[in-house]
Length: 385
Image (cartoon, rainbow, N blue to C red; front, side, top):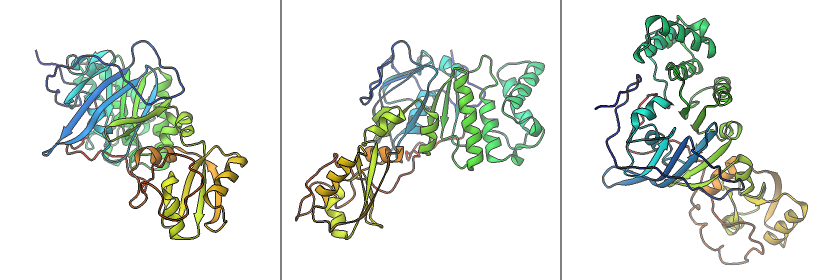
């Protein structure tokens, strides 16, 4: 028997032989939770194209019930592919996953009834009014005309859209469209327990982003589980209980924002070098690179003693460092440190000549800050569940 398709129109995933699994993640200082998780995935793999390009390479993931969990990663890391697999829009090549206690392939109908998916673009009909969009969605879930009208009115009020309810959606701002898109995912009763938000604030102005953040906080306050992918590190820092950094199809690190920041020393010492030669010699020790300004950033605990030791070890003659500054580590530092390849010409040992006396952290290097959209051959369609 064919599984019913949710009203927002995606095709069912192809059959597979997946079973349950549990996730593993990079070490963190928190104790692993016990009991059933809202989202569990183990060993997910996915490739696209010919020759095959591996997008997911043994991904493990666990999201506890009632948590806001953010998935970050550089371009092509596999974030959208992960969301599509968990939402039953795409089948993994191998591995296992469960959402809301249901297998994403064997019980995909139950998964779809338990989730709401908001993609990167608002999936609403611009020719209809906001009220008409919600009433249509409600009717497609099987609600009566009166029930659909009542549910639409409730959601319009909840998302602060009552005043614009009878205006065509094409006249809405970007933030209003996103709120309507989220409301459309809530027309069913009971409300979904798991929300997938795939870069929901992309392209929005700061005020609209703040409004969407309030919606996410409200969902979490009601006990929902939220899996959020985002290109804004500040967004993850403010909203997420836990954050996972996805790189080359695997989880590179996971933890709270504070735990992840502590992995790069808690603070960063930025050095402006006096010459290109000095920059190249010390670049392999840094977690932040700005060749245009000859600036390198190194992790430190922020104490005066360690800062003095770093300066003395890196520039004992006082000739290579023009000036320095100290600031708290950010998620940008974590992101760049753990997900970026070493810059050309800086991998391996320092250049010949005077070697630095101190090596404050493993050399990872960085490139200019990447975007965080998937670059697979499976295009993201505007859709929500």
